[in-house]
Length: 555
Image 1: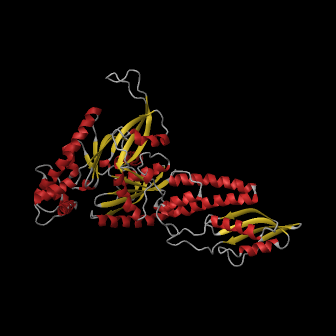
Image 2 (image 1 turned 180 degrees about the vertical axis):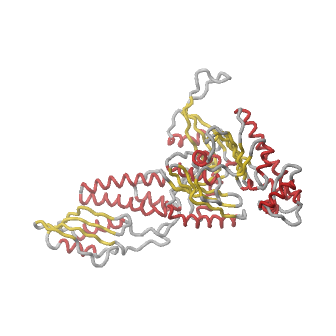
Image 3 (image 1 turned 60 degrees about the vertical axis):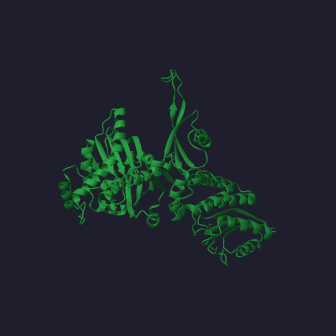
């Protein structure tokens, strides 16, 4: 299936997004980056601009939105179960992890069911019997931290379908986005302002993923301490003139970077001292990275052939050459995207991975989605704008079909009812994650999402109820059979087919319809045919006089 999905990466100083299309292989259609000063007010302004950009993408018919969150506060564990039914696991999971995590509502859990593990007959090295069952991996994200991430998005009417840690999103990006060899062992270092993601990959699969609570901010601290300036000024100095070089090569790297336009000179700043301060900060950053990497690779007996650097800090001039000397393998700034793209700004690995995770979630292949339970997805900016009235119409038509079936006892209405019920069940399952067949249930779900002002106050259900009640009250003495009642999905045209006995029945019926405030004062003449004393008729009425909802249409 081909989907168009948006991935959002909210960093410390910028918000980035990409619009991806999945058809045969992934491609990036659009991307963007919105700068922020890092303050709460600045972040809110950036998200407001993001919402405006997404509204402009409405014509692209976005299928889903995905977002990555900070992976450094994620906890994970494994549990073994004799069954693999996700619904059953979901019920007992909070209790099963109480030995390590409190079951007080402070954690948001998500899980994925792995393969069945046969413990074998010999037991482990201590002679204890090995566990058997399905290996279920569980992640724990602080509930309030997730709410704080979603709250500013909700204020600007962005509601991601998928939210997952960046470390969990990366596997969705590798198969369709990176141009690497099937057996190539490589490392991806995503260096942000406050965190670094270390991923060891083989071909198009992730073998190790670690999130470290250290990032480019260590350079800011080192520069601020060396030059005795505020931290914000140090970050600006780093972004303007910062570079890194091995000892003794500072002057050559500085001149080369200056000529290439990577940096610009800052008056009154000792460039050699600046390069040494950056190298000092990077040394602190990469000590933990190198140790984690070497421990893993020694256990796996594998040697990486390349290191790919990405993230905001990866733009530091001279970093690739410095890292190559430090790590002992070639290091390149940027990841080898193998997808077609004309986009330039905002194309980050996290944003791309979030977009592809959202596409996988549509097909039910993204189990570690944190939008679960109380924080389950209620609708998205694009999807609800395009489909909210369809859901209300389906529910109203279903209920109306039931009422009409009781009046007419028509076989065709019963068949239409079954078809609409199946369509409604499928649609609500896709949007709300559960089958809803009652009007008040769907209305409650929609009212709990963002408000939109385009829902008409009069729905298809209103038409059914008015016709049913008034025919029974005013035309009880008329011999009339209503064969079918059709209402288009936009509730603008009502078609009524039936048969009426006598000469006065049809005029009285049309006079009754003229009393309905949704219909015009003069009903168009119907198409008729007469057999003996019964007249068959087909009426087509424009229901364009109904009042439309304002700001209070949906609370």
